[in-house]
Length: 183
Image (cartoon, rainbow, N blue to C red; front, side, top):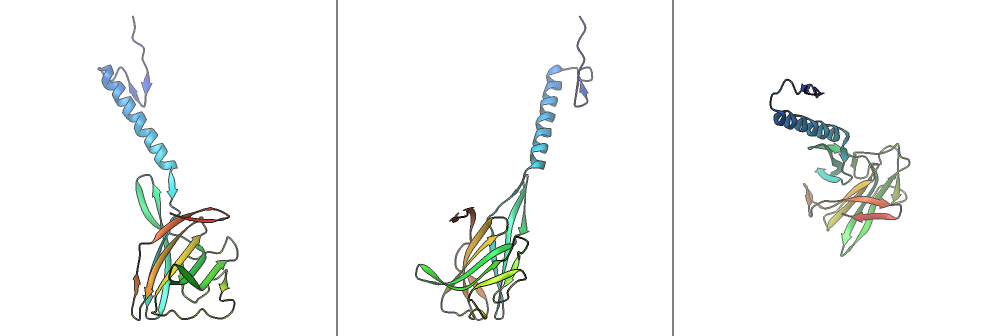
């Protein structure tokens, strides 16, 4: 009775004397190959956005970053904003201070300076002129929606010398045309 010869992943049963060892090696290599194939196709972009608020003298900049995961590796990537809302928090609501929106899907900005309209954007509030200067009276809330369909919210205090973040930023996913759901 002759033994059948086969070859899987370059390992044949005649190279390894113990069939159990050969089987274990084949199973391990198969699982490893499946894991690599799965990891290579899985590039996950997290739609939640972190808003980084920076103040240099009287200039306040907003930078939008998110996380992209390739297999087990996470990296920070810039997100392009399509909508930005800044409101001064009064009680449980926000009074609109500045609101801008991209005119089309090709426009977007990964960094926006307060009061400077990025190319391809239109100002919704105020209708004309510059937005009012930020003051030290209370916290401001920044909400951003990105071209990728996610967004984030953060509150900050405007100080004469530096910005102080008052809360942990909140990211969200856009659930549909109707609006957003905080996450």
